[in-house]
Image 1 (cartoon, each protein chain N blue to C red):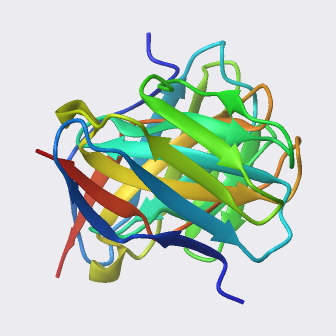
Image 2: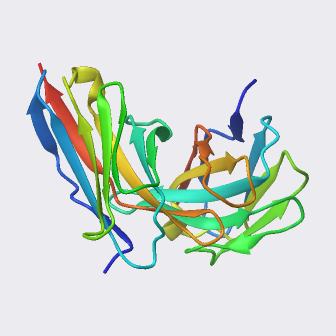
Length: 110
Length: 114
């Protein structure tokens, strides 16, 4: 099993809908997780971090962490065409190393 | 405040040539990292430096060497480039040597090895 796994997509949602992105992780990854957004040809930029079980909200974004089931998700409310990008899930390993999933492509159609 | 900068932005090499990718950060961060990104593979850690004076191997270190020149600069060297090293290379930095902090990425270097 890969340490962090994501469905590559693409996930297509209509403008204004909720986009739900999911990520599962193995025992080799600690309980700190990050969601990065990456536009085509650009570098990853941090959207959300989550360390505790439960939900964390920031504007239109909500990160959810379920330690018992070993998954983390990102919800994007009121999706906009500008949200179209690749979303990378990352989990922390020993020594502040991050392990990244392969990313999910999100397409928001207007 | 430029953040994390990388040079060059693009590079084409022939098999067997060597080159050094440069990375610098002006945020006074302790830790620095080199990743490569290939289609369908996500970001993979090549080497990292938890603090000035230390370096450690990541997931895919073979064929690469690094130097943490000072707190600001962390370079990645390809001694004898191979086509398998064609990739986009990202440098990143984070404030602490350990703990729960964010990594900030540079703009990337797109490398092609013919």
